[in-house]
Length: 338
Image (cartoon, rainbow, N blue to C red; front, side):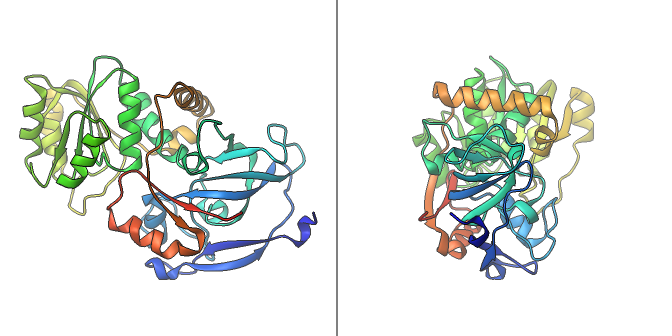
């Protein structure tokens, strides 16, 4: 095979905007440089961060022309000098990087440093293998590392029907914690119940989140809250926290201003902290701890990605619109015929 003649179909965008700014381009593929690996992509996992990046509202900013996409899985085609962990033919999953514009996964071939690759777990399908690392790194970091969840503790997980929310539920339950989940709609509540989640609040049905929590806590309090929403509910969550409890904020889905519950935080000695997966990604020790926990838990059957639906690579616009509709339970995956 002549790698110099290879080309990659790649989704890119040249301006901030809605789904229509994405265009499918054919680009030349360079040979892997030292420490790099060339991947033939099989599947791509979509994340809400992809939409925020395209719209210009994410922590990372696009450099045009920009790629996008955090996750995927595929087959190693070629390796650069110094690569020791992977060989051509290996099946791999892709870790989220800190440079979406350069290493975005929305392509049929991807050149990426080997440090962002992990061997694909044999027990997972290609669809599942592209749906591991963003959600489980975020959930492990927020629930275990930042939240300190352990056996016997009680945790609230908001936006529970998202891929990160579902991952957090699985990780908290694997740690022996009691989980209370919240989601927006009655329909999503039922789907979470169908997945085996025992305590679920639908905020459209129970808009007073504090009262809904009191009803389920039975006189106890939350030890940890893992929140992706922000907004006015932060005050209600704080009221339900135990003395010395920890609130971990990892998202800001609410368009409303998030008030700081100062008096409650003082009275209860609350720890309130922000968290992004990059905290784990940039710390070699945390990253290795997370990697081992996630892979061992997948192997033991405690963790399993929930796939909502799949789209073809050529139908990326439809996949993006569905992602923005917020109808999904779990992960949206794009598949490639490669």
